[in-house]
Length: 90
Image (cartoon, rainbow, N blue to C red):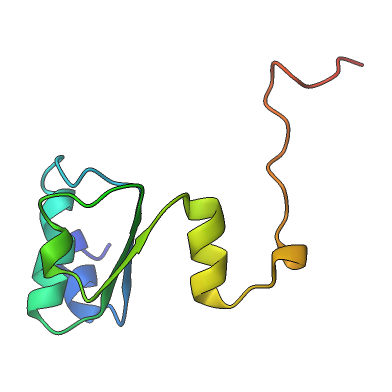
């Protein structure tokens, strides 16, 4: 099994999605990757203490910002499935 640290060193891109970047050790990985010149893009509703280290920042709801950043047309996005409380029982 490859260690998370090794995976971070071998990555070509990192996407940080909806994280407060407060839970370590994972919170430190994007900053380490950015220091290795690996592009890091953060998708979040507001900046946090790590945002300044990342090359790209997309503010807003990830259901809108991520498809747009990836160039996925809105009509191709799949809506969320209903939650268990909304599901009809058969």
